[in-house]
Image 1 (spheres, one colour):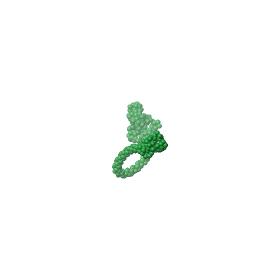
Image 2 (tube, one colour):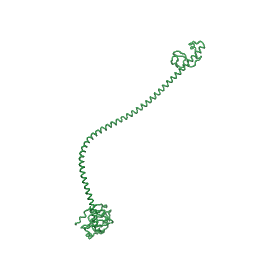
Image 3 (cartoon, helix red, strand yellow):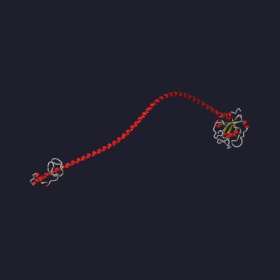
Length: 327
């Protein structure tokens, strides 16, 4: 507690101050707590004086008690303030520490990214240097290409002019071909009409008695590879899908040229009188709905001219049928 006279701190429940000697009590004073020494110091000679001293002591004790309570309140208030400040300081320190930790972690990540970026920049600079070298090399090559391009353009101009002239010639030739095609079409139609008008109708069994001429010069499709064109076989009577129509081991053309029957056994019966009758003439054979044309040479052999369906194309495409005209 605090002495009310000198203001120094002394032990609680002390009856007097160890520094200034002031007498005081911590509880309400009574006669049994006032010793003889106190009465002697105060020169109390009588009971009235003692009561007065007790009253005075109680007043002082009350003042001391209030001072002690105030002192304790100040002490605990001070402790509370110190505690609050300490708690705030700890909180602030923890907060700063956490922020520093996060900042350090972020800084470490930033350093890592910075190092990676630096490596990427170094690599980019290296690639840029290589690109610059290639560009310099390309520039040199580009000049060569430009020079070559100039020469090529000059040559191209000459080529374009040549192509223009060739195009004009081609167009001219195409126009001539169109005219020729028209003439050919007209001549084909004229030939067809000529054969139909000049040709002599003959039955299949009669024309079969005139021997065939050579078959190796005809141009066209031969599916069964027997040496006879597919378009000719219906006129002869053989099967265009069978190379050996009678299955005797010999091809149809081999039997016909040798004088044998390609459709059965025995020889093919030719009639020289019929061949002589139609020498130098065109014959028209009707098979189903198709008209086939033949020519009987002066040598007595017949040659295939084609059918009306193709304007007798065999006559125009195969000229050998006229070879025996003078024989």
